[in-house]
Amino acid sequence: MRIYFVAILFGLLSLATGCTSLVGATQPEIPDLTPALNDLQVEKNRLELSLGYSKPVIYEIPGDIEIVLDKPTSISVKGIDKQRVGQEAHKIRSFRKPDPYKLKGVRYIGERLIKKERKAGVAGV
Image (cartoon, rainbow, N blue to C red; front, top):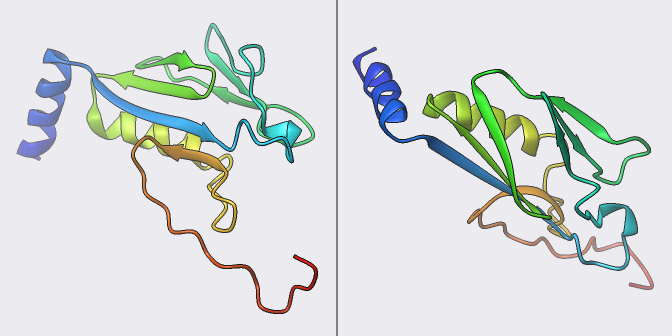
């Protein structure tokens, strides 16, 4: 319990940040994953993401969290509670987790992924 209060105090002194990035955005094979500035939009309390699904993913931003778009493929989540910032960054990541074969999707900045080999029974690849 004491550590939780220390984390909140640390968050009050300097905002805790969690960063995610959209990877595979420049690949021409998947044009639906190519985010542009108009594909990532922050309006009032909503974040709209075009992640390759038939409709855009709309995420309701909680009141104690601030979301900033640093680049067209980078999202920063800021807030005073470090645990809450990590939880909201994980929710954004869960909309499209990185594919283990192509390593495309939403991932944390600095996250290292291990690429799997292709499946053994696939012909013509």
